[in-house]
Amino acid sequence: MAFVDEWNNDSAYVEVKTSGSTGEPKRMLVEKRRMLNSARITCDFLGLKPGDTALLCMSTDYIAGKMMVVRSIERRLKLIEVPPSGHPLDNGPWSMVNGQLSFAAMVPMQVYNSLQVPEEKERLMAIRHLIIGGGAIDEEMEAELRSFPNAVWSTYGMTETLSHIALRRISGPEASEWYTPFPTVTLSTNDEGCLVIDAPEVCAQTLVTNDIVELKPDGRFRIRGRKDNVICSGGIKIQIEEVEQALKKYVRVPYIISKRKDPKFGEIVVLLTEGDTAQVQTICQQVLPKYHQPKLYLKIDKIPLTETGKPARKKILELCS
Image 1 (cartoon, rainbow, N blue to C red):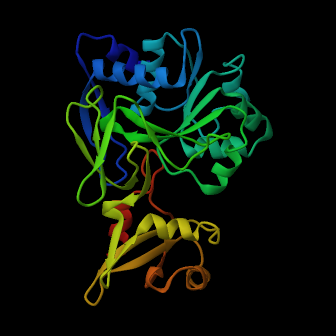
Image 2: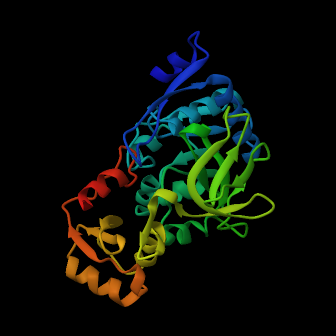
């Protein structure tokens, strides 16, 4: 594994690249000691012990895959590497596991695919701690995961925080819509309501995010959307994610919400879809408040995604112009 060679070289730094969900992926150098700190914090939170088994099923080109390796190094976990794929628990990769997994990290697409195949779902349910990151978790998928017997977690973080700094329990009676930050993390909000992260063990500087959140006095928080995904239309601020969420139960074809500059309203809501625009428009008029309804519907062949499967918002915005 090329990353192990990089980890074992004489440099105090590792090169990582961001996901590129809001623009082109960027490369950055991070300190190995801070990656070890992050690994220790996660392993302590989950109660992982030396000898526990961990599954690496994501590319080590990105921070999520790199951190699975570092956690295994820091906690002396038995790391099982399978090729990155949409079905990390199918018969081929599973033959390498040889028993129950203590810990695994996946993106929502991998979890979704595994839930569609009974034997893969059974294997997913057997993972003692499953963390899911890299994108939003669909409501229906989250409802299915809620009944899992073991711990399933949604993660909050980014490349700059060396993976996650907070977890939200999805399964069991402890399931919550609120993220709980690690004890070493202090959170606040700025004047725009965006989350501010002070995590000195993993990030040298205080990080101001673009995530608009609701923050409780005890530090728990939930995400309303991103600052750059706000549409200011006719004096009303519309959060893109809230419109997308409101349509999830009703629109069965791929779609995405974006915006376009407009001389009258300032900005207007735009819906792009791979399906029939007339049908989607009818649904929007039935289920959305009038000021949330798109004023423009665009038919596209394929919704642009990043390498990690997130909506490529910048490219989508360009399609609207």
